[in-house]
Each structure stands twice: as C-alpha cells, then as structure tokens.
Image 1 (cartoon, rainbow, N blue to C red):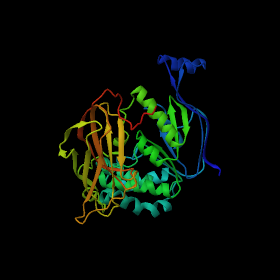
Image 2 (cartoon, one colour; image 1 turned 180 degrees about the horizontal axis):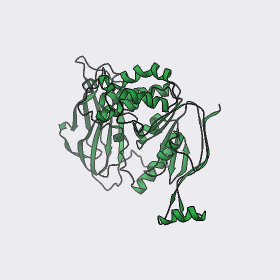
Image 3 (spheres, rainbow, N blue to C red; image 1 turned 135 degrees about the vertical axis):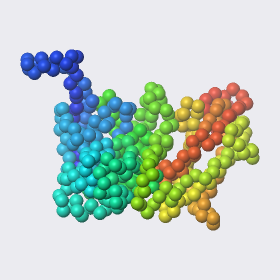
Length: 410
C-alpha cells in the first residue's frame, strides 16, 4: 500500500538575531547575521492509509510544529511533505474564526479554507449546526459566544468536512461533559472508518490505547518510532528520570475541565445524562474509612464503587490506580482490562467491588484514585482522585514498593 503521507528531510528553523540591526545588515550585505534555531530537524516518515499515529514528547520538543506543517498552516524550511487527501486539523480550534462574523458565515468561511465548494458546504451545514448544538446562536457574531460554544462549533466544522487525515493536538475530546462524549465518539468513528489519524497527547495511556504506531520527538528529532508499548515505555522511563511530568498523570490527562458558562447546548444529551460516580468506599479488614492503616501482606483491602451508568449510553467501565507520594502510578486494575463487563442492577444503578487480599504493597503512604471510563476505557467521565489514603506498615526489612510472591529453594 502506497504511503498517504511522505515526509523527507523535513526541518523547520527560525532565524535568531543578536541585535535588531543585524537584520538590516543582512539585507544590505546579503550575508547571514543570524543563528538558526531548529524546532524540527531532518524528520523522515511515511504513514499509510488507516494508520493511527501517536506523537509524544516534552513541551517544546517540536510536536505541534510537526502537526502544523502536516496541516499546511506552516511552511517547512527544508525538506518535503507529500500528502494525498484532505486534511482536517484540531489544533487551535477556532483560530480562523472572524469574531465580527456570525457563526453561519464562519462555517462557510472555514469550509472554503478547507477546500469545500459552496455546494459542498451547503450539504453539510445543517449537520455542522446540529452537532455543535449552537442552535439560534449560529446567527450571532462569534465574539458573543461562550468558550464552550466557540469550541463546539470549531470542532463540528473540522470533523464534518470528510477528511482523509485527521490531526488532533492534545485533546481527544473537547467541550463540556455532554459534548465531550459526543466528540470522543466522533473521533472514534473516524478511526473505525479507516481514516488516518495523528494524535498528539501527554496522556500516554490514551496514546497506547488508541494508536498503532508512535513517534517520540525530542529536541526536534525523532528519538524513537514503532509499536506503542516499547516507545511509550522508553519515553515514560525518560520522563521519570528527568521528572518532567508527574508520573502517573496519564489517566488524569483525559479529564475535561471546560465549562459551558451557562449556555444551552441544544443537544439531546446533557451533563445529567452522563455516567457519574456516586460513592467510593474503602474497607481494610472490614473497617471502612477514608484514611486507612494497612499491614503489608496481612490486610485485605476491599474497594466498592457505586455509579450512575448514564442514559442512552453503553455501560461504563471502572478503573483504579494506586500511586505513591510522588504521584507515580504503582499499580492499577480495571474492569475492561480484566474482561469484566458491568451491568446496572435492578435499581438501574451500577455497583462493583474489587478485593486485594493480603495487600502486597510495602511500607509507605499511598493514594487511591478511582476512574469512571467509557466502555472502551479511553474517555474519562469522572474521577474520584485521592478517594482514600493507605498508610502501609510492614513486618521485616523488605525494601521496595511491593513484596513479590517468591519461594526459596536450596
């Protein structure tokens, strides 16, 4: 299969001048009086149709620069990019909106920028407005929109132009709670339809779950590329060595924090229809409390989660993470990963219990975070962070984090 995207020797640099007068000297003399700062250097890659490519790297590594070059919103300094197909980019949502123009006019403007004819725009216009939930506000200037309305309209436009390639920077789902789920479903539909996707995120959990190929960019160069698990493992160890990100933050990165500032969504689904955690209870040897004293290798820890499954949605999944005082994820468990399919009870509510017999964590203070996720385990509806604190004590002098089952032989 021929490559849908071919990138050869791609570089992007910026000219840095020590003094403003050096710019004038350069023009007059025709000789360079600047230094080159490379945001990207000698990038080579090929992407086939239907691939989902993840992009990871620290802030400033060059990820967004690469995505902007692929989206043709920035021109390369060196090298070439060959793309076969229409590209839609979820980069700076709404960056091309004209604030004085109505939402209606901005739909036509943005569709024209993406290469759609007036007739093609008219065919998708109603769907764009309906999906965005803007309603009658579509005829108001976008400068009067709340941030939630602004993002929803921009996202709706970008995902209704039938792109062959979808570029997503940082956010897998956007907007308020209800629209966040709908936007997530739309992106997953792109993947199911065999669209090519570039997904850039600090959420390593999402990248590994969603992508089939991952690029790790460091200081403008591809440091590693290949199957998700080995690349993400190497990058995760790199982060822990440099303490660049709080380890264990991957799950939290998918939570939506955008409020709609009171504007009506106009959509069938509202926040009240979404799954939500109603209770988390932690018991150690039958004693229930938020802060627990645990004896390593002796105490049984039982965690119970109650949740509302939402309305007209697949039953969600549940996951939990044990983390250390430094925030690093030490262990996790999830119903999806363990093959347990949850179903609401007779009362229409969800309930699940997980038991950790003779908890093997060694001495230390640990936090328990509980997550209510979608049926795919990708989209987080809600998180109960630090739902419990476990103060683990131990007998003996074992060191480390966990007491691994073992047997001595002579």
